[in-house]
Amino acid sequence: MDMKIKAKLTLSLLASLALAACGGGGDGGNSAAAPATGSASAPAVASAPVPASAPVPASSPALSGEQLPSLTSPQSGSAAATGNGVEGVWTSQSGIDKTTAFVDPQGNISYLNTVGGFGMSEFFGVIAPSAPNWTLTSGVAFIGGFYYPTTSGSGTFVNKQTFTGSYVENGTTVNLSWNYDAANALAVTQSSVAGTWAQTGSSLTIANDGTLSGTLSGCPVSGTLLLATPSSSKNLYTLSVSGTTASCTLKSGATYSGNAAITFLPITGSTLYARTILFMIRTAANNTVAYGQLTKQ
Image 1: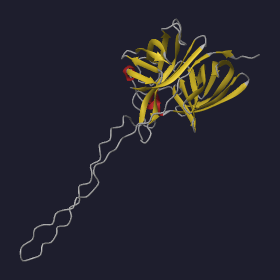
Image 2: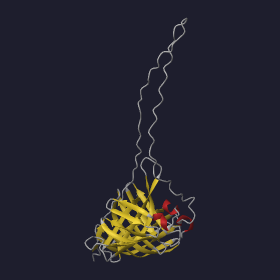
Image 3: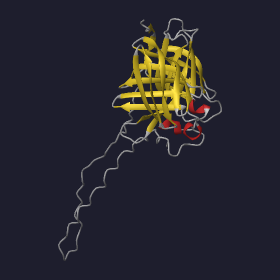
Image 4: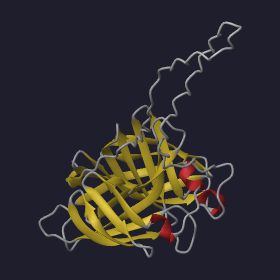
């Protein structure tokens, strides 16, 4: 039996970030010095030319970025410092192929596969972790506009290091191999996500209490972005939004929810990184999925 079910995909480009620092210069020529006047009894000796001052380069704009948090010295209260070992952000990358996964304290798991920044497939499920093992209790994969319920899944994890295993979707075994991401070493508060975050076609303005409004893929939305563990400092949030326009893909009357986290994009030409909010959400009926990576404005 073909288990694929049609789903509408709200596509968002995961953009890389490049900040260019402009430089400038002045007149690079040297001015000849006038000969000095000598005494009457001796021939005048021309003074050696005085070299012109080197042009002062124009000041470069400061790059807005930061160093990656350290997993060997995690910030106090972060998931890497206080988490249960499996919750948090997991990633893998090979060339332009990248996977980013979230596991929250309740065992909800989601991940997004991208190629060159474009989303190719998404997964949402629930795992039951019992170190060093995990078992997938339910799951659904979104690929090419269809979703496929999973039939089995299991694997192992090393606390705050690696997550491996496999599951079956539509008769095909999917293998997982992820690493614990440096974003887990970041300690956050609810107000860490306050402000306006945007990418092409999407923009969310988030208040200090987590309430938000804006657009996702051009569709007006409102909702909340709240810490997955209230009052904690662990970098994992729950995003819940509702559409406000009946004619949009993210329709009014439906709730779209999932996990989100502050993640880091490398700044081209620098050792610094920029903060972003990466999110993956869906409806309970699995008829719409949305994802994106928004940068701070």
